[in-house]
Image (cartoon, rainbow, N blue to C red):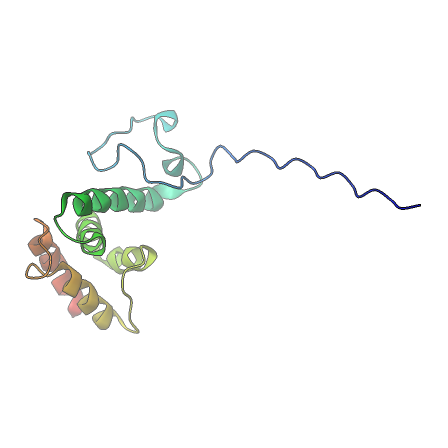
Length: 140
């Protein structure tokens, strides 16, 4: 006599702290989230860290810039990340690589590739010049 296959177990619902698939609706307008963890998006709560939250904010701002027609998404993302990590220049390149922007074999080549994206002659973003000023010391 043939055996019946075992019944499949129901898949559990997604975790409450799972990362969002889309950037947050309020990102890019300054400190939109309150001081309490319950008012912040899931990625800013425990387990995801501030770095991931900043990346999501920059991506949302870059998408908005690209939608306005200021520049392409990659250019806007490079400018936004550069400005966001201005006080921490050593973290700029790591953030750029995590965001999927060009990376090369060494720091100098990577900075040059990112500077090509941010150059005011190529990028019409209003903060492109400031981004170039932040990135130029990283060439040394």
